Image 1 (spheres, rainbow, N blue to C red):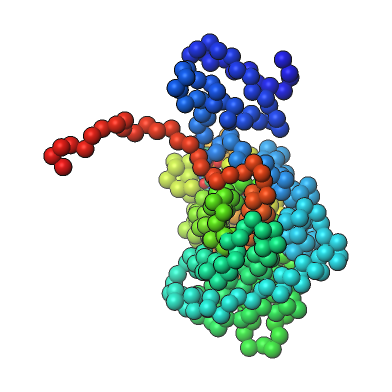
Image 2: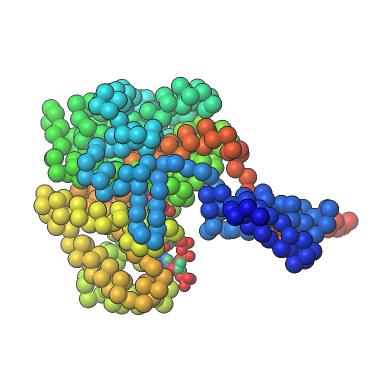
Length: 426
Ligand code: SDX
């Protein structure tokens, strides 16, 4: 018997089956021959929420949730955050290798060339109320771009895929900044190609009457770090949405709009907005113990805590916490930080959280920096979506070129009614 196999005995029939084990997994389709009779459909695995099911082979992002390790294409997240620009990391995520100086400058030039958005996008935004949620604005604009670039549907053409990849990475900060300006009822400011990816985003957000916007170097540094930390995170809910929608060969703008919708939810990227609302509700240090008691009674959740994969400190949360000091030196300290640090201290010493391995995730501290930078909470998830576009596109490109992938179509266990006839009286 080869060593890398699994032997399964079906106690219903007494029959034994052997399934190969490769890369730590068996193929779910190897369960199908396990039948009680010829007309039996065959055994399936039941895994709501994909708790133990790999849906793809990927070579982009590695997480060891027990050790709190995150790597893009093998490079540790802390090294990338310390040494690289966002576009260097985007290139790495997309191509698998860090760019040479020439490759980087050509990629930067491509992104700059595509950073403007068509004029009709302003009319789309103007049609929405300034009260509208900016994630709704972003999803709408992305879907609208699908109508503007109909050739993007040609997803099987590699050249076309690259063009749409660059366009989406280039345009998403512009769309995010336009959503911000719409909400604040300010005139839209277009891209400035003299600036970095993060610096130009700041320009489109905050330029007023000055002839040339100069980003504060420490704030630009912080935004660059935040962008790198959010760029990809393997098969999270929105990456899975991107893959699932684009498995039907939908165009990448429509698929990215779906990914934005997935990210918006409060259990995923929307948590950064919820963390700030939670800190506001707690209000002051003396209310923290009562709040923790409410969490333990399951009346409320400790937003920004817990993760499907990390059963240790999210390494991104650690880097964000450290970056906060540099931001606060410029903007002034956000008083919410004290509340967050005390919440973390209590949570990490309380058995409710220890036994469930609940640690701060990426969303716990990011909002505190965003708020110090002058953002209102409802735009926070847009700030997550902008860098995550790179990850979604890398996941899409991997999916499209993976010969094993097909349209995503889960099975179900049907437990509803069997056949029944509509009553004759109808
Ligand atoms: C992101 O997947 C990714 O990679 C996502 C992300 C990315 O970069 O793409 O990292 C970004 O989405 C971060 C997560 C942001 N969400 C939140 O901060 C919302 C609060 N967190 C939880 O809702 C929750 O922890 C999840 C959604 C993040 C993970 O959910 P799981 O894996 O389904 O775990 P679970 O809900 O089954 O929780 C396990 C236990 C439960 O207790 P028991 O029923 O076993 O007794 O832990 C408890 C939960 O009740 N629990 C919490 C809690 N999170 C989990 N209890 C209180 N507060 C919490 N935050």
